Amino acid sequence: MKIGELASHTGYTVEAIRHYEHAGLLPKPARSSGNYRLYGSAHLERLRFIRHCRSLDMGLGEIRTLLAVRDEPEQSCATVNAMLDQQIVQVRARIAELRALERQLRDIRGLCGDSHAARDCAILRCLGSTP
Image 1 (cartoon, rainbow, N blue to C red):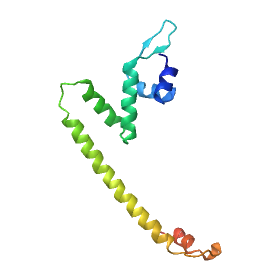
Image 2: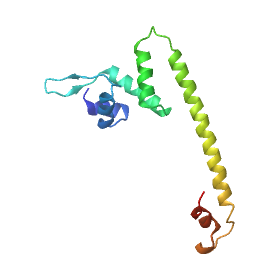
Image 3: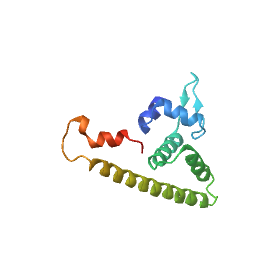
Image 4: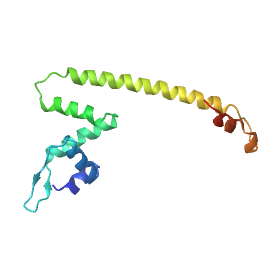
């Protein structure tokens, strides 16, 4: 299948597919006699794997590592386990940061219970002060 067909099957843009190919996450496809890229089911499956990893907020380096382990099926998956453990730690840290942000926003929101003229708005005064 040509790159446009692959894009429609995966939900990726043609540019994204080329980017993953250039980044080494997707093997170079064969070329037709007209020099069109020809992709197969392995490319489609690999892009689906990449999409799933991206939906889990994994970066290209992490995906590259996962693909390398996946491409060597006799290899230990200890690296994969460690990577997921690290991802979980990062997600927990982000959740804590977002909770702290929510508390800050609630505190600021609590400064102004009623509608006032903008010149009297405690929220605007607070946002204008140095944190």
